[in-house]
Amino acid sequence: MGSSISWQETGDGGARVVLSGRLTIDDVATLADALATVAPRAPGLSVDLSAATAIDTAGAWAINSLINRWNDAGHTAEVQGAAPDIVRLIRALTVPPPPVKRRADRGNPVFARLEQIGRAVVHQADNAGGFLAFLGQTLVVLALTLIGRRRLRWHAVAHQGEAIGVNALGIIGLLLFLVGLVVAQQGAVQLRQFGAEVFTVNLIGRATTRELGILLTAIMVAGRSGSAFAAQIGSMKLNQEIDALRTIGLDPIEVLVVPRVIACSLMLLGLAFYGGMCALIAGGLFAWSELAMPPAAYITRLQEVILVSDFAIGMIKAPVFGFIIAIMGCFHGFQVTGNAESVGSRTTQAVVEAIFVVIVFDAFFAFFFSAMGYN
Amino acid sequence: MAALSATLPDDADVAVRVRGLVTGFGDHVLHDHLDLDVARGEILGLVGGSGSGKSVLMRTIIGLNPARAGSVSIFGQDALAADPEAQRALRRQWGVLFQEGALFSGLTVAENIEVPMREFLALPDAVMDGLAAARLRQVGLPAESCTKFPSELSGGMKKRAGLARALALDPPLLFLDEPTAGLDPISAAAFDNLIKLLKDTLGLTLFLITHDLDTLIAICDRVAVLGDGKVLACGTVDQLRAFDHPWVQEYFGGPRGRAATGDST
Ligand SMILES: Nc1ncnc2c1ncn2[C@@H]1O[C@H](COP(=O)(O)OP(=O)(O)OP(=O)(O)O)[C@@H](O)[C@H]1O
Ligand SMILES: [Mg+2]
Image (tube, rainbow over all chains, first blue to last red; front, side, top):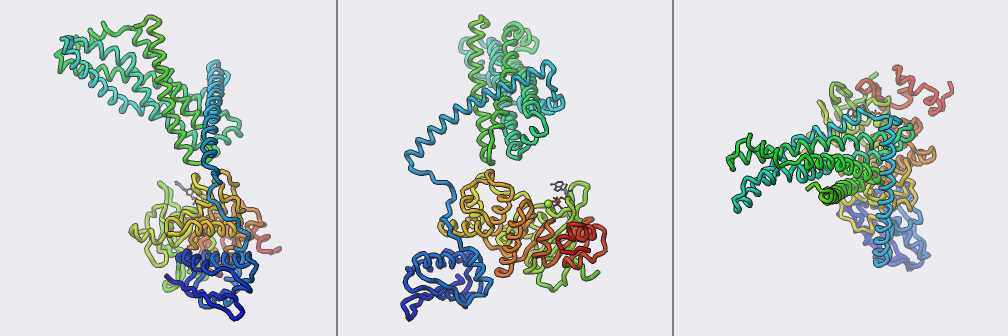
């Protein structure tokens, strides 16, 4: 664009290059190419800059690389016709620059892949160990809090409770209401084939109080709050806020984890109950409008089909799920290191693992309580 | 008093012109009809108490913080009202170093420096790597730091890597927020020399926020003092030392100010 380069022979067999125009970063690629066309030769090179109208650091770098190349080949190279400042600018860049690498080398791809697999295994084992340690620490602090040896931060519990529970009422109510409607409608369609439409109430009553209501609420809370815990604690970690807490003498587990764990367990209990109610209401509305079953009859029927044990099982599972979600979120938050990307991946892991473990526990509970005779 | 005015004549060749700028957060008014000019090719130092609004002023000028009133023009172009295309062209004209460094945490130092080049120019990788190495050298970072991630750098190294990124395109206008804070005195002096060299060779214009009296004295052409939401005074260090305002007197006449200006009276 703004620069031109001309190579000339000198009488003694050396070379001379005249650079004119603007030697700036806009043209540095063509400049570097053109300067590399002539191989170094004896006795040397002179670089004429008297016609250059502007030089910036990029231009200086290109000239400097040229000079270095000739010097490395054992020939002289000098700059002519440049202001002293420009010469200083060019000189200032003269280093033995080891070619810059953007990232550390990966090495042989096969070994690199093997290494990656090995690392992942070790990392997972490490992670599991770290998680158990974290779980243990949290349980100890929780126990100490319960017997009054550690302070329970009520303010934090209330604040988290609001974020986890109260603020989720709308979305969880709507979700469970819709699920209740769908279960009732699909159930009615199937049961109608046997003329057993009334059993729709059994389906909706038992499914929501024992399984669906709890599970869906837990999944929603994992998505809403488990992720929030991981991201909050993760960015605090990046910002060295966790270190600051420690140096002040506060235990991050006590300050950050215990309130979240307690609030999440309690709130999931409340939310699961509330969600179940929303599903039952949806089922009732469906029964009223589609099965011509008046609300009073629906309620009586619910009382017959829902066992106290169903309800109790649901209410036992809810706080356990809440605990799992909170501990997963907090654990992954503490595992964040280095950069913003790590916050993202740990947040994802927190949610995915929380939902996975919740479902594993749910399956366990299902078999366990059936084996105990609570069908 | 006229000599210490922060504004230059209307026909002066200015890089940045701020007029009647009002900013604030909530009820709190931070800048109250502030006027300031930065002449093309000068190094303007901005000083003021902690919390006086220096960083916010810089952020407002570069369009990161909304202004409640007033105008900002950069190289004669209205920076606050420019359309997106013009904004992009303007951004090519300046480099910014934030107080906290603001390096991209997911990229290595070399990749951080190459971000502006990648965005605005189509350069071959080899050229970008060479330029990145040259930048690292200029700001005094060891070459092996190029593959490090920001979380692996010391505080001063982050500052210098941020400076290298701000310089990546050799922009004609540089905004630096406390570039020497956290640097050892030798590195700080090297920074002063680098800035002077770049100014002499490239004709840089610099908007420099600093608390470093040595830097102010060594490289600034004029120094503006921010206080009470306005520019209290603007002039050379010597002019300011004679300026009759308690804060300015305290700043330049206090023990540190006297030590830096080599004045033992
Ligand atoms: N995003 C924000 N919201 C509310 N107030 C803010 C915000 N950013 C800055 N402030 C306030 O504006 C004032 C000026 O802040 P600023 O960062 O500009 O100070 P400064 O002059 O750069 O100080 P320092 O020398 O310590 O860097 C402070 O009182 C700060 O509390
Ligand atoms: Mg600041």
